[in-house]
Length: 405
Image (cartoon, rainbow, N blue to C red; front, side, top):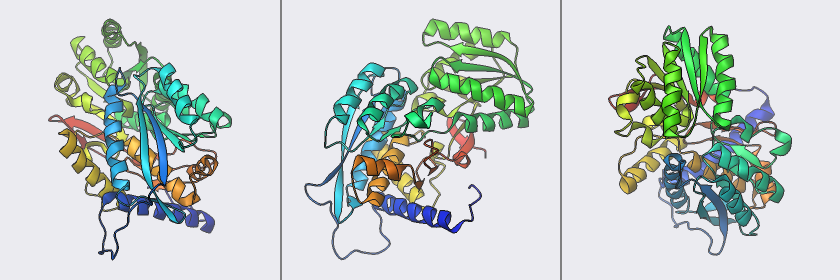
């Protein structure tokens, strides 16, 4: 955990906001420490409507489908009692649209949802490019938007991101942990294989600086194109640098394809992944021989590592995992960013005593919440809220993610 700030006003703010989030999470868990005399239900006719544009098909489906599943489970849990907003308990209603991993379609969907008076907030877009296409729409329509994508430019510059928030970790925080891990492993020469696009751009900037600080030689940076043929060529270029390790900075499923190509090109050294590389698809049978023994820096939910946590967030996460397994089979571990985005929006509505878009925005940017993926701390000058201490180091052992630190 971060060292607490000692000012009384800050402590009061953190305590009140964390308590409000804890109340919502306990409701989502469906567990009470005592038997209630009356059954609490949402107030009929009153809703908190959240639109979602997600990659349920196309290249982003490796990330988007898992987020949609987690979102549906969390919304159903919240609706057991509803979200307390003023003197009402509002039912959460989701409007989920498949953007097909197409930025232009995502923008049209955001426009459609944003022009409706009954939609109070928007979440989604697991790819940086689809999120970026939504940002302009959300800003113009003054619609709070919580992005699930990786890429530092999603939440900055703040002057153009007043209604935009991001739940994924910062590239600099991930890169710092990766560089420290590489240094601790005694590796002195690495190659960075980064996907084309905004997420890869963030990784190149962050890893270049982090490796320099750690005293590790960045032998070469290779950009990873989308085509299968291009992946093979990029892997060959990376292996030709004769480095001891390769850092793959790419979202799934490109990350798994890169790992297979690197092994096929003869790389026998270590593999390291950024947080965006991790999805259920990463450990599927076609990837597993290539990724076994590899490392990743990822939020603390990976591999069910928060299951033993006795906090409200830990209990909510256990319930999510249990429901996910019942409904969809094996749970391989991923960060439920969509569930946390819904929690942030719901908490903002509770604190604001309102579903007004402007008030939701105001309480989103002054929120400290313990989510399922990690701890979030948003401020008016920081709209990328995941705290760096929420990240852990993991390794694939026997086909499963195991936390090392």
